[in-house]
Length: 124
Length: 388
Image 1 (spheres, helix red, strand yellow):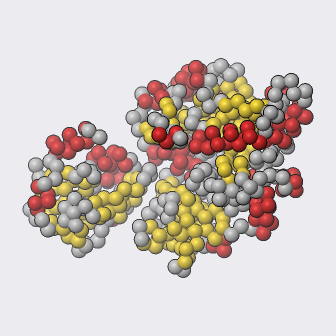
Image 2 (cartoon, helix red, strand yellow; image 1 turned 180 degrees about the horizontal axis):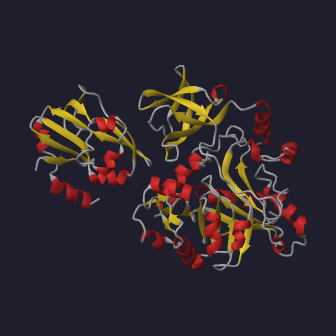
């Protein structure tokens, strides 16, 4: 309903004027054990699609893109404190990456909803 | 080239597909990358025993032609002298049943591949060598060997067989129980044949830093052997992902990354693989450069690198000192054993001593790291004295 998804496997949930962003369960499963992640600082702005964070598994390093344009208002402390297993254990809840203040909510509504994303993943 | 062809299936493809769906193309083969999880498989191998399918590699036999008329030691010296045209190791000096790690070098002193050469233990095999080269280099290597020894010996490919690696502290116990108790008596870097599961060629060797075996088995017996090994409670299947993190912790080179046609064995810190007789004879490809570097030192050297924070530094990351580029990372990732990032790379010799602090340029940000000795995790090879 209020959660949307990108083709790069980010999710974004809109709660009033706050957008919470993370990587999907599919992405976490594909990555495997996360061993490092780097989140952007509060106050930094990103355009939709810009490289925003990095997540590294034992296998590989992956970029995380801003699913919508906006300003970072918070980064997940658990991840900042190197509790990266949270990303594998709870990618779509406790393992969130950042909170943003969206600059254009229309971008959010143009993303895939849960059913569309499920179909998209099935086709991969 | 193989690039345009679909990747080849392993003879044990069906067995692995029943256990994982995570496959990937490596050197033209569709290989299992991961089963339970890279870190879990890695840790299991260090604590118990991992079973790896490495049938993509290039095992072969190199033998004097039938009716060669040489016997015993003389036959070995003859066949060894032929392969020594390509490699700088003392192969003539191998004892029956001994295995040696070496490299095919080019005239410029670079490395075309790294490989294992074994002298069979059985007296009836005098004049034969058992050679295992890398998957990605096997066609080149075999062509080079045939070119350099045309008419004097025969190269017989054995890459239609399966090569299974059983690695870890429980490997000897499992191998003794499943194959033959005599496997436990082998010393590291030796070879023996066993009449089990058809006929096996077994080397006590590996690519993990652990004790273990690499077992060549005919494809028709491979399923039975793999299933028997996997049925042992100490054994789990391990994919290529953990194979890479295990070899990196062990400080072992991956050809095409840590070694290539421009890297000399001396730069790669592999001087120990060139024995005295060959250094004195100066008769191998690239001897001029390699021996000059052996005497005077090389301009750069392969080193271990420990990032001082948590960010992994992977292949291609540039290494700086006081703002000046001094080297590059050739392999890097996460070490499950040390629970942190580790890398290997080449730096200018002046900065190669353990303890030197350098900067790794990761995504545009310099991050502090320390040069450390290799391996990152101590080897646990089992070497047995004669008669023990």
